[in-house]
Amino acid sequence: VHEGMHSIEHVKRFTTNGMATDQGKTSNMHGLAIAAEELGKPIPQVGLTTFRAPYTPVTFGSIVGHARGALFDPTRRTATHGWAARQGAVFEDVGHWKRAWYFPKAGEDMHAAVNRECVTVRKVGGLFDASTLGKIEVVGPDAAKFMELLYTNPWEKLETGRCRYGIMLREDGFIYDDGVVGRLAPDRFHVTTTTGGAPRVMNHMEDYLQTEFPHLNVWLTSITEQWAVIAVQGPKSRDIIAPLVEGIDMSDEAMPHMSVREGKICGVPTRLFRMSFTGERGFEVNVPADYGEAVWEALWAEGQKHGATAYGTETMHVLRAEKGYI
Image 1 (tube, helix red, strand yellow):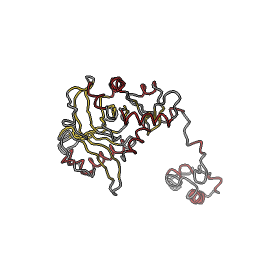
Image 2 (image 1 turned 90 degrees about the vertical axis):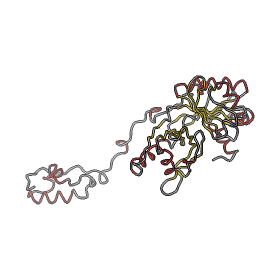
Image 3 (image 1 turned 45 degrees about the horizontal axis):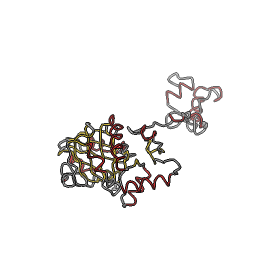
Image 4 (image 1 turned 90 degrees about the horizontal axis):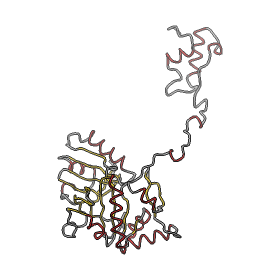
């Protein structure tokens, strides 16, 4: 008031009375009384400022957004989504991703479809879209050292061309994420994460690289959407893939379980992992996402020669549970 602020709104903004953390009536009444006394006027003449929550409730409608139907949440689709939809797949939401849940044939309910898919994968083979798994490239002279600071595994000892199941821990020792990691070169790792964990693992790595280990010579790149991943599982999986692959010896001796090789499939670059989440012989075909559907269709055509099936996430869960995989 002594500064010439005679309007209560000016007083409020000059003193920040009733603002910031005190948006309500708590200090305003004291401020109004002091200002009224200094001005020699009763409080009603000085005027009132706007009281906010908690004294004046905020209606719920003022803080919620409008429903936008399918646009309420962003939807992410894999390269094979269109193919799966044409085959009549039932989809489920996994994070923001739409994933094929199961592929029912005419007259089949979910239980019957999943049973058929499971039996076919066990006896022959099946194709599964695993593209939603997070993928991060860890590159640089100190890549292995950096990985050992975040995971429980001894990455320095992992040979080039081999894979290992990795467990990432938080500071308190609880599991933060997990996934298979392949060593493509002495200074390059292809790291997979859980579908829902991809963003947080990338942020976790970036945070530690910048704040705790800035002396390490490492680069991190999210490649989740750059690679489509087609899992081919079952006794006939190698027979399905081999005719399409160039430059990779897929024999047991040259490519044992938990290996990774780089070559070509259908004429496009591939990172071919030999790994299994079903307990059967299995491979995961990584190809540039733009070629994902074309490579899937080529593998599907080969699979049909052997009686293979497409299967969804429900069958994947059943198969891995039967084999005792986490």
